[in-house]
Length: 338
Ligand code: EPU
Image (cartoon, rainbow, N blue to C red; front, top):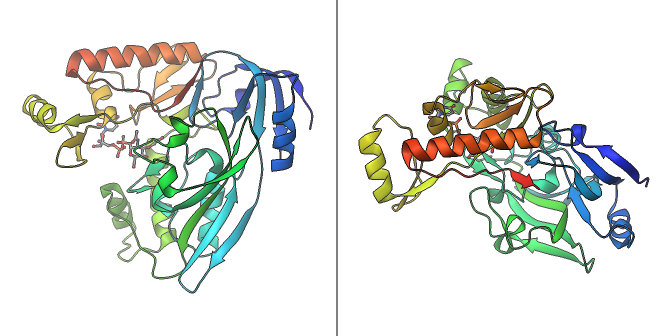
């Protein structure tokens, strides 16, 4: 383990923000993680995973611990299903591909989401009709102070829409080191409820899709809408889709009958923030190196050398405009690192 001083994090966050870590260390095992967390010389410690859901608004005056623990293994198995444990440093999409190569179903709708496995539960990643919580069994997390390893089961994690215990009460307290999932070995439950998947399958004349077909469809949809972080810095959806009450929704629809929406429950409706932002004229706009993606207004992008503060200014500008035009408050889904 080598501690590096004044380390640029540009290649360690998918937004490609060139903020610096005062100190940086990569760990590849739980033992190394424990050792580093015990270092008294560095009182401030910051845990970094795949860096896919954060905006660095300034340099980090701490020891940044890059969690790069690898490994996938079978925990339990019967004729129909399997429980897999993946270590935090496994790249999420590589894990999804691994499960498909082995014929395990369940994660295919979550194909091509950037980031690492250990970060996935923090915001309960979700896409195309499936959320992480639907396949989640448990995760192991190390307490940053008392160094105890605890297993959190589904009920402990308080998963919600882009929410979890680890994003709220448990914030900055735990380091997730592994995640376990229950997947199917046969009779896979194919989820093509999200309209775009059906359309994509239709293009290729696929009527009875396999889990691989679903994954390929999701990959094609994501590639057509979302920028590749390797080419243009971004953090996926920058904002959450706002959820409004039935009363607010009825008023909103009277004024904007053309707006898309999802019904969440009898009392609540979700409005796509991408639509709201597009209506405010931001889609495809560029302000220096900070911009709004041309195919999906929910995604803010860094064309090269934008700072976190510039992206944040753009985000605040968008929030104000959406509030003024629609009376709806949108909030970031990415973690803002201040
Ligand atoms: N829309 C617009 N303009 C835009 C973007 C979207 O009018 O610029 C409209 C679309 O036409 C559609 C609706 O908004 O009617 C929904 O769009 P889409 O299906 O692209 O999904 P989303 O609500 O924008 C959410 C997730 C994505 C996830 C997709 C698919 C959030 C914050 N985002 O986006 O997640 O991939 O659904 O499930 O919930 C991510 O979190 O990084 C992410 C990409």
